[in-house]
Image 1: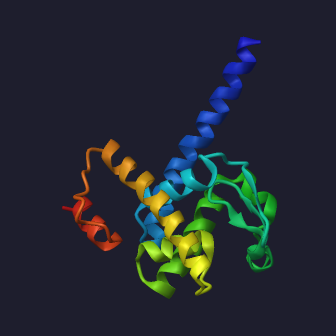
Image 2: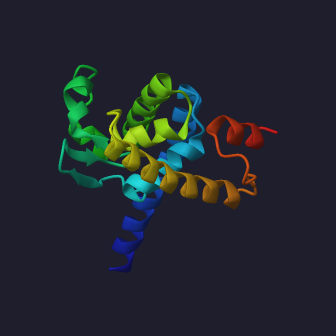
Length: 169
């Protein structure tokens, strides 16, 4: 029994280590701070590769980055199937980074764009509140990740470009 438990634990650790490398690679390829991708993944799935989250409006989210089912038709054109998003951590992280990059292109590298990753782009007061709440949660997680690496973000530095300049100095 202990051998089976060990084998299961090692498989889980291997998936997480593999995913960790993918945060760095996707961050590099999409020019997004990998720690921001990690923060979003923690917020979305608590780093659970096979997470499925129900979205009452659009369907459901899949995997580490909770890629929404509303994107499945588009992703199918690139050969990405829904099951890939819950079995291939790198595919999921890259897909999440792709959609975050779209938000950054649309609204600039901003916390509002981070909020749009989860709450969409609709310009209503309700969606603005959802974006703000989501971005605030991600900000807390993100600064916690940075703090664990010994990177202190001054309270006056709240924008993503400002935070990125702190970490690169």
